[in-house]
Image 1 (cartoon, rainbow, N blue to C red):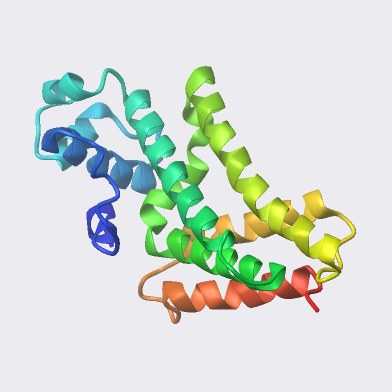
Image 2: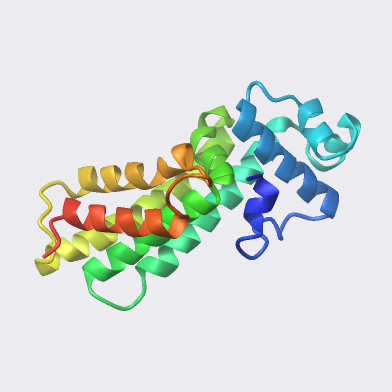
Length: 206
């Protein structure tokens, strides 16, 4: 499944990228980075996938890194919104954590091509872009940590190390983007449900 095909599963995730040529280049970059890695991908590769000339790319993006930065920022903002919307709903800490994990995992599976670039090409960014994206990642961590802290405070969870457990939960969720296969035995929703149950057991939900 390509990045463009993945996009069909939700409201156009790159709708904020205009004009159409800039969006096409961004989608092409996602596919190239996911397939070959950032460093092995050239601007010519990206332009070719978008059906454009290499010179046309520079009209919209000054550098290859600018493309990666925009992909990373938008992707992290989307993942944060998915997690925050689910985790701040009604219900107990256990229900909120299950909803948050289910939604976060489902996004990483359904949007696995995008998520793979967003989560695993971060180190290719320059210092300023890296700092901006890391700040978004910290917000993601804080959402999950906050729910776990609520559960511990209410006696619903049995967690001795909240920060360590948060890291374990985040690692479990994010890694789905690395291995998920649309031809595999489980759908994104099924993986999300499975992981929600696993995480509740990790926190000793009562």
